[in-house]
Every structure is written in structure tokens, then in C-alpha cells.
Image (cartoon, rainbow, N blue to C red; front, top):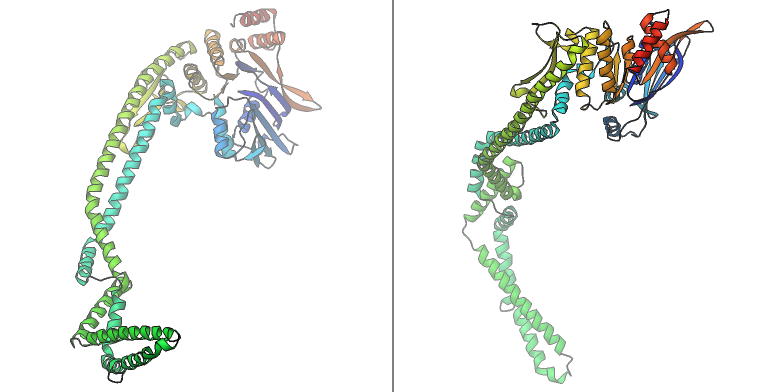
Length: 555
């Protein structure tokens, strides 16, 4: 709740500090004393529009500070945490306005945007009356308010979760359909390209082996001549094998007389003979390979050129053709599989939609039942508030699928008709200022246990009423004050008499300047102020007695 309000240099207020309590606080004073200035100052601290005209003449700037004592789970702390700002109790909001109209905002001495200050303010205070109003007057809040009254938080959460699952299922289906459409657009080309590669049947490292074979065949005559000469040198009548064998025989004859000195030499000759025999065998094999069909060179060249042409066509190397063929085959298999996948995803999305609708319709039924209860409860409050001919209607309408969302399939709006037979309309368009405040009072009394805003301000909720109706307003404000903090600007002695805290706003002249002051009244001072409200400028003993009676009977 709001526990402190400090105002400096705002219009007629030079320096003012208020300590506020819970329950019902009444602000009274003569017309023009400056009660509206207090509300303007509070609105400034809550993110309201700044204006250079709010700065007291002769001052450089105006400063308003509002201090709130809040429970740890209050939404204001979550807002600050989202912005990575320190969120601790008490929450102190401050707004400064320079003489040129520029303003700055702070939360616990941390600079924040005016937009964030306004968001914080909307979670802390609701103002109802002829000045700035939000909260229940905003149709976008009506559905949330009704859900809270219906105690349908679990149903609302289940609907939200079902919506998210449906959206995810739809996205998966849409993504798969888009992928399938893109792939099918190139399906014919893929099948043609794959058929060509299947016919070509490229092999791993085939280009290199074909190039080597082609190079060898292109120099076949020179190779054959060299091979023949090498065979002659190694295995002919005067070849290397014959000489090595002869040398080995000569040494073996005298090896036993050399004391083992010839053994390494004989072993080396053995190795040389073996290596020479291997070389001869390889040369003979190569010679046999050279003795091929004359047309093989042409066939190899045709194959090599075909591989390279296919590689150029697809922008890859010849060695990459086998992998490219596998890629094309995989894409075509995916096309064949995607048809089944798409059908499965469409079925999943349909089931998710059905689950969402089931949850949303259950929530809708709870809203319809709660709407009827809310209308009856508000109707019971309207009669004593001199709104007995008025009608409050909570309209729950199911929307088209295009407007469905995480909050369900309903549009919820609070409507009123102030005259019998009139068509209900929006609250702020049908009701006058005084009627509007009393409608808000009736609603707030009914909804007191469901809201998270800890402080309510009613500005002249008693406009145009008196007697028993004013007493009914006071009784409801007092009852509401038992649930949340209530501040009321009032001209009604019946309302003021029920207050737990009474603040008097008045103008004083100091040093030739008029300033607005606020004082907290004790019991005797309250009696005098309520007597003034009853009798006017001249306070009579009868008025004092009547004031005493009102104060005594407020409980």
C-alpha cells in the first residue's frame, strides 16, 4: 500500500509530506483548496503525463516521491526484475519535472523510463473518478478481472498451455509443408539428375585411376621399348640375374676358407637375386598389361570425359560425384517420406487444436457462470448508491478462430445501461463522472478480494448525492478499506465520518504567497471539519452534534 507521499514545488504545494495508513483515508477541504493537486502529484509519481505547468512558479523543478509497502510477490517487483533492476521493499518511486517540462523517473533511486514507471504505477494504484482513470475502464483488463472473480486461474493456465502446444504443432506442420513444397518444386530435376548419375555410376577415386591408365596407354610404345630393354638387361643371356648367379657360385666355392668373411656378401647376393626376380616379375606383368586392345584408350578417354562433364554440370569435382548421387537419392527419399510425415503432423495439430478448444470451452463456461454471479452481485450494490435504475452487464462473447489466443476464445467486456430500456454501453461512455465513480465503487466492493492493486483512489465518488445514498457510499468505501487501502476525495460528511484517517486540505497565505497544506486531523479536529461540511462557513452547535453522531455511528 501507499505509506508515504512527498511533494515539493507542485503548483501551490511548496513542501508536503504525508504518512498514510491502511483502511479508508478521507481527503476533505473547501472547493479550490488543492485536493486535485494532490491527485495530480500522485499521478505524476505513477507515470502520468508531465507538464511544465505543474512546477510551482519560481521553482526550478517539481519532485514527487511515493513510497509503497508491498508483499514480496507483488507484480511490481517482477517488472523491475525483468529489467534487471533492484527490486526490494519498500518500493520508492520518484519523478522530477523541470521548469521546461522535461522529466526523469526513478525506482529505488535507479533511473527508469517513464513507460516503466507507468507500468509500475498501474500495478500499485487505481484512480476512479473524473480525472485519469484506467484499470477497470480498460476493456483489455475485463477478461483477466472476470477470470480472477471466477477463480479460474488453473483453467486459464491450462488453456494457455494448450494454446502453446497447438501453436507448436501448427508450426511444425507448416514448416514441414514448406520444406515439402520447396523439395517438390525440384523433384523432377532431382529424379532426372539421379537417373543420369545412376547410369554413369561414378566410383570413388575413379578419375585418378583413369587418368593414370590413360597416360600410360598414350605412351605405350615408349613404355614397351623400355620394358623390353629392361627385361633384356635383367634376365637375358647377358642380364643381371645371370651375372649375380655366377658371382654367387664363385664365392660359394671358397666360402669355407674365408672364415665367415664371405657370409654377409653371399646374403647380400641372395637378397639382390630375390629383388631382381621380383622386379622382373613386375616388369613382365606390366608388359602383359601393355599388350591390350587398341580401342581401350578410346574407351578410357570417353569415360574420363563423361565423369568430368558431369562434375562440371553439378559444380563439383569428379571425386565428389558418388557423394552427390547419395545426396540426390536422400532428398528424393525424403520427399517420399514427407508425405507420411506431413500427414502425421497434421493429425498432431488437429489433436492439439481439439485439446485447446476443450480447455477454452471449459474456461468459457466458467466465465459465463461467473459473469452471471458478478452481474447479480454488482446489482445488489447499485440500488443503495442511487443507481437502482442502472444495469451492469458482463458480456462474454465467443470470437472467431482468427481472434483465439492463449487467453481463450472469449471477448469479455463490462457494460452499463443507466436508464431502463437503454442499450448497455462502455462504462466511460455511458456514465457521468459521479455515476462512473459509483459504478467503480460497486465493482471494486464485489471484486475486492480478486485484484492485486493495493491502493484505490476515488475522486469525488459522492458527487450529486447526499443523505442515505452518501452514507451507503461511505459504508461501501469502509468495507472496501477492510480489503485494500482506499483514499477518497470527498465533500460528503457521511463518507468522511467513516474514515480511518482524515486529511484536511486547505490554502494558507505565507509571506504574501498562497500555498496548499495538508494536515492530519485528530478526533476534535475531525468533528469540526465534518461540522463545517454539514453546515458551511458558520459552524453551529447543532452541526457539531450531528458530526459527533456521524462519527459515533460509523462503525
